[in-house]
Length: 166
Image (cartoon, rainbow, N blue to C red):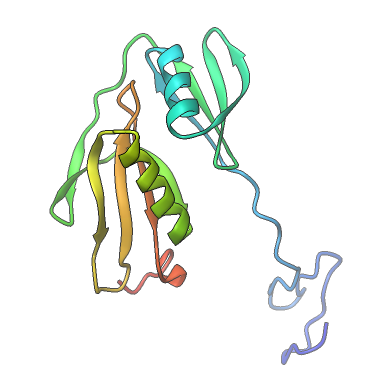
């Protein structure tokens, strides 16, 4: 491991025994897992498969696994849905509890066009949030049949995804 100005002493995991710097190669990002409630599993399956293009995995009477853009989400059947709150963001009422995806710029626009073409109703229609500011992002919100809110967003400048300055 050349280039360490501290002349580190690396352990078997490529972490310096002195300063703790991790010099190991980046690890491949693994899919995330998210479980969420639905009050009608059949309607949820129709929505996630037909509207969003997910495929199904394991299915049981009380749950269904979906491949959500390469990630694992699981719809769990519940007798009643929880009440949701919203809060103001950029002049819009954003559902406080939601999940979604940060997409590549062109992929976001393709999904937006598909949703518009298929007449999917938006909770918050596609627009650019924080336009001409750091953190500028394309965003849109839809809702599934059970009332779960999904946000799809994209950044022209990928470095803004985790930027703490704005």
